[in-house]
Length: 210
Image (tube, rainbow, N blue to C red; front, top):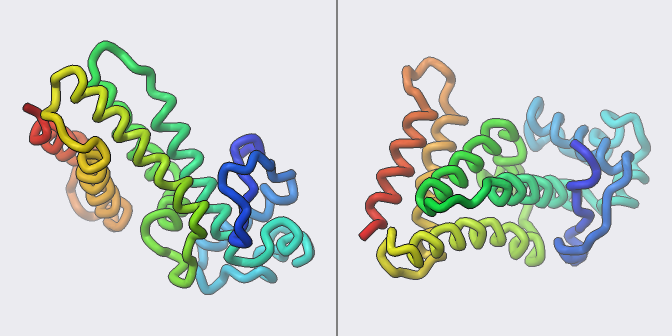
């Protein structure tokens, strides 16, 4: 993970859109926090443990994130930053439905590659963490990316006219449902989750068509 994609923001009210960048120390602290969360769960996520696992003093955590919640919020923002980048990096073609499908596949790819961030973003893996209003606004931007793809399909006459954000919530709910089941399963269930995701999202998109 490079510092170029990590936005500095905190629960103290710094806007998620602030173009401050984390230095190498901040990146190392976030990596330590993510690894702790994945290996030991939220109870291990303390300022002292984050600092110790990164080989630093607690002052480095406080000076960059303000608190443990500031670290978790930064993981939350990092996840949505990566998700937005993946969703917006798929090229637009002459087929809005194909582009919508590609956008959905990028969503699944992000979740599979970054399960800990996905859990922070959507599954309340840290139960006492509540993202700040600027962080929530930043997160909703990804819904807007999906809505724009859906609006493009509507404009092309390939979907019935409707509120694009409402349709985006329907598609996103389907994606999240399949992915949550995939991430939660223990590997013994004989299910091709890639195909389930493809079939489920295609069925929803077809249902939203004319």
